[in-house]
Length: 496
Image 1: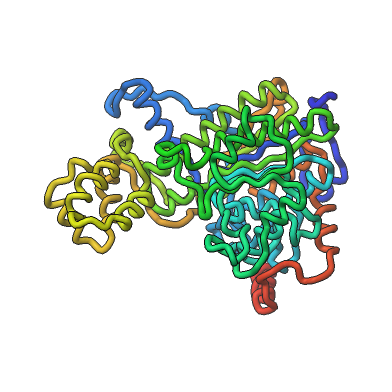
Image 2 (image 1 turned 30 degrees about the horizontal axis):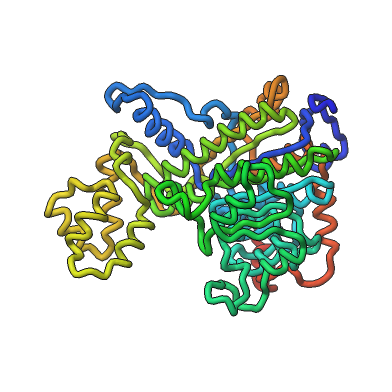
């Protein structure tokens, strides 16, 4: 099959209002580094390079990371109702090709559902996957696989993701991440649900293999390619661990790279003898959470993991040239700046603030000051704290905020906010051979985030709008959490 042919689709041009003569592919890998900005990449690149080359900040020898090789352009991220987007609105844009309001999960401001690129691929015969380090029903994976008016409708999202209440039934062949508690009935003591739905049980009835811990993952996915579809693996009731913490306890959870390898192996095996390929969305979710927490060390380690996944996928595509990669963040998070920058002090940090706070809260000994000095501060990269600094930290209502200030001063890593920003984000991509040159020519420049799925649509020869028509033709109030008052407010906003 010739995947280097150009696609000139007059019907799709009419729908989207702009033209692309694009190469064709059989498979598409979309990677979301949630909350990642250009400063995130700079910090990770310099952090790795100074260690790898043995240089220092006064005479640096800087080497590129995988993401540096794959920059295509930049992406605008605003929502329909705000210059600063959240993951739900931005996710709706790059999954479905439509602007919507902050908190919207693949619905328009009117409340009507819009089809995602993953749903469209599944309806067309492709295999599909979602692999994340957040809860699987968090905003980014949710926009590909569910439709609710508010991102916090976690129970409803989980039910749709596994096909229990989705109009199309199960549309995702592989789901991996956190959020295990939303798939258990309320009778389970570890459940997060307020009803008796047993979504793991439903998944098994539909033929899914269910994994709930690292041992099950290792047993089922041995060799990163032996696992048959469909399957669901959720390895934490909450978000999965930050990479800085997980890497110290790898027996607890698989890494994003390990999950991505397993998923790609399974998808490749499942489509070997098919005329249709696969679509997979991989999310480095916790870059964003570290930005919200202003946790520089956690942020840098999850950004490095994102680059490790990019490097693996680039090699994968070289071996599977019928596959394309596209990658863009939904938004930047934290307003990260590097003033007086030297990432070397971050090397001494062994755990995230989240992990250390849990350790501190769990301590029930009698020598809290001694435990703080002997255990907490060294793991936070502050073993050299003075007695006066220790006193100030222990006296603070939240020592973690003060510890962040001390690390910021040492490393020159500064944050302007604990939220998102409106800054544009990088667009990364890759294709093999001559298609790489064509792809770069197509996507060079600055793009609105709604244009990204429209490009994927053309590369895979799909029709997003047909999926939307099918969803909007479904009778009944299956979209939860959107009352009439809200619909009126959002419709009014959209009209201005």
